[in-house]
Length: 77
Image (cartoon, rainbow, N blue to C red; front, side, top):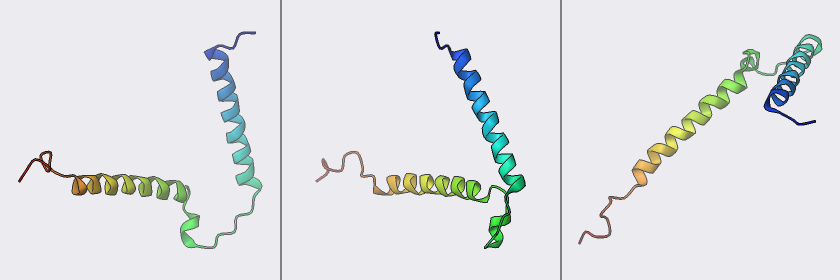
């Protein structure tokens, strides 16, 4: 049997649906014990990670401009 993109996408969507179903089951039956107040915010760690990554990118970009030498740095005398 030849595996086509259509079959691969179907397998992918089935796996995603099963993953969402298992995640919902875990949310329904799992008892959550929060240690800190911010852990009660839904998707806090995903949001925190996104903004942390964006901040790292901005800092690295700024450092790149700060560390950059002039184009004719070695030719000036």
